[in-house]
Image (tube, rainbow, N blue to C red):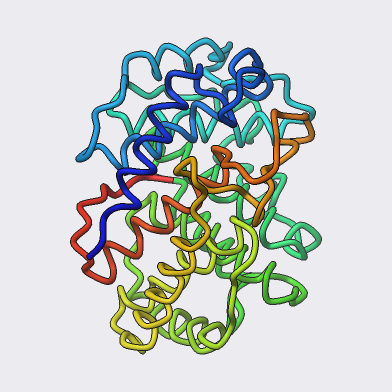
Length: 319
């Protein structure tokens, strides 16, 4: 197995580290603090994936993340609404978790009700579940936080809520298009993975989901590729249509490598970086890599490595 691409991406990450954990490799980007919390949190994931090839400065990464820790242990970087604050806090905590640094229990009372009011969580309405990607993300954040806070008595109740929206090919209220449906499934899987859920309990649903997506080609922007890989690997995990899933994953592996830029990383779009993050403009450019696209592709690659036994020695991360 050719590992030349790994030395290229490690070199890209070394340059990003030298460039003040910037979004892209330009001098101007090194001076920008636009959504720096997010770029550093994403870097933590990449650093962990390639830890066997290079040891990045985890102490400096922790220091950068803690600059944004506020009251209640939320990590705040000028959010436009509370859902962004929640998402960025989850990113920061998972970043710390991946690099082996201490995490923090957040003040659940700030945005989540008491245990006896759990049915009224803000994301638990049929209207919210019309958009399973957004709502699945909120449920994933919540399960992540109660796992970090060791409030395990809430998990069973949350799983009952999720059961209400279970369909034959995913979780939703009114069926969305395939891209949004797959995005939503991926978010639910991240929620279940963080609590070490036993997927054998929903093997019938996993099989139906795999049947519904096996012929779909998700080869466009970063999120869609990552979402598709995340979902498809569950077929390998449960040994369902395993050969076809692996064949598909290997095709995606080669596709991802074909998109690697000369600077060593990947861009979120084919030849263009992201221009904004959570509604705020970030350093951007064309025909170069950005940290978001790079992180999504690297997370996809470690999953393919693990499930297809490529022996690339990439580390598993927690998303």
